[in-house]
Image (cartoon, rainbow, N blue to C red):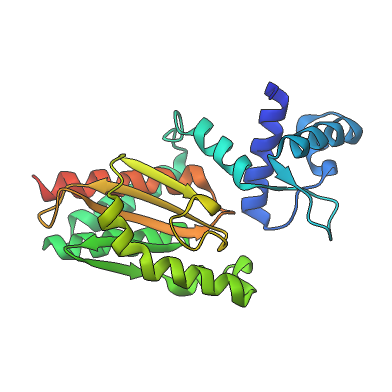
Length: 236
């Protein structure tokens, strides 16, 4: 992939996350100060490579799971570069965690804050239970108007706690995009989770579940921050 194609893919991922509609060549041509024909040629190549797709009802393009994976892998090294809004969100998360008192309340506060900041469903393991909040956020997204997709999301949620216990992902931050998810592969969801140590377990988890169309840079940064803050405050 050329540097310009990388930049176009990044723009498509981030614009689609913001507007929830396929991204067209006219908008991208303005962003990159080139002709629409040039953008269309680059988009055709990205589509041929499997990074974007064209919904049959639109002239615009949307990222595929492969496109999202490429994007996530390439922002992982520098996604913690924060703007003022991101720093404010991080401070809110820190304040809510540190003001909670009991360990269980700290974890719940962290989840509830993630829900408010990311507009995704939030979750965390507390002992042998999975605490979840924000179902209305998840099912309020335009992606989940389809009953079959809702069923797939429900299946994923039903099986998430036993899967976490069995698979025990050991990365500080793990991202499962679309069909990479352990169950509910057709749900069109991304699961972003951080592992942390707690009084309940050395392998506790906190994270979010949302549509594949989301602001990965912001959500990944906040989920990782939540895990770090919880581990720090629970082991002070």
